[in-house]
Image (tube, rainbow, N blue to C red; front, side, top):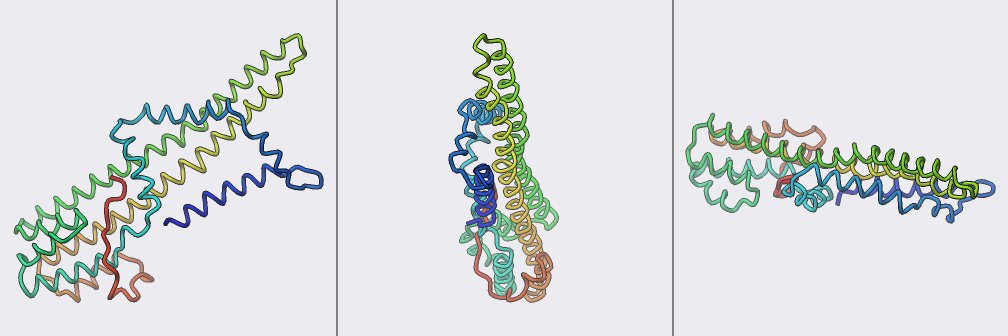
Length: 276
């Protein structure tokens, strides 16, 4: 589980709710004040319009990936560069002992489709430059798809405050209309509440919902891209006949120094796609 995301979002919600309850005598918490921040009209305008605009801005194929985005967001164990390095060193040992054709069985057992594709490219004796071009193009296109997925939440983050302002205008219009009523403007309070609470909802949606999701998806993409680059470099080195020990040292340069300690026996990782 992505514990930093959970702690951050839940903590922000708790802090906001506690802040909303302040205001009693002597600065005491007053839970009853929370009802002041619940306004059905504001929810309808801000959340409803934001969701509808996101739907209007993207094709059905992209919207269908939203559940997958949340699965990726909460999973931080999908891409383990040290485990991938261990697998590549094992492959180098097999290739050095039995030749590249011996990797076909290993490739068929590989659950990561990108890793499997890369292995099969050298098993099929493709030209090194051509094989690298295919691998790098795969990485570029995959990263572009992931960026498009994160862009969906960027869109939500950008339009939510705008619809918060729309709700504010709606509330102000209703307030001004109520000022002409012969009853003395008894509806000013609810109208003004709608005007202000919609702005609050827009900010919350943008900075506590959509913004963190977009950032987390980009982090998952960066992690996956790093693992794929390690695979490309490792596979090309295996094709060139690199020594397994030298290959490990070469691939460890892709990870931070603190991650290299004890890197000789990492667990095997699947390293699936981030948000495809």
